Image (cartoon, rainbow over all chains, first blue to last red; front, side, top):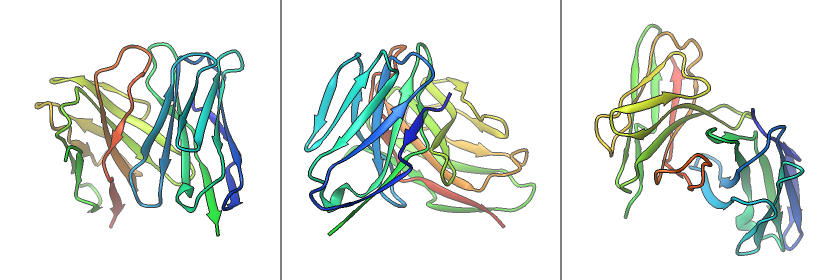
Length: 109
Length: 116
């Protein structure tokens, strides 16, 4: 079952912060985060494999709340290069990745 | 540099025609995937393969077929049975993973398929 991402879109000014949420109705074993720029391939950001695990990629970090069956991606001090569509992918036991519909992020000067 | 190559970048299909999308990787990955991306719907899994000569259906396999004769190659055929083939198709690969999808997927640049 496809995870639900929120918000659908967010507009930021350079330097501002944002949070993207990814929720599932199933128990999760892993959460992937990818970023896709228009017309390009999705690029891997990070995987979270354990409940409570947090990872970071430059000033982009994520958390995984296993009990709440959700993950959040944090964009801190956003840069113009952070613009794109962010997808979460979730996997339950023996399942393949199910991707959310994406969150479009626009960072303006 | 290692990576995934998809071709062609754009493809047009006539009614009743089968078309084949190419996906080649030189990352020495065991697992390969095909996704379909429609506007506002994220990525949906069509087929995946964990090993040569073996593949499984994903969530939307109807109207598609694949083969995995070589580790490096995982072509996707969009058959005439697929009535709504217009979409962006993405191929991905990863290191062989366990049951928890614990390996990152590396994507190709995609093929945009349209109906004439």
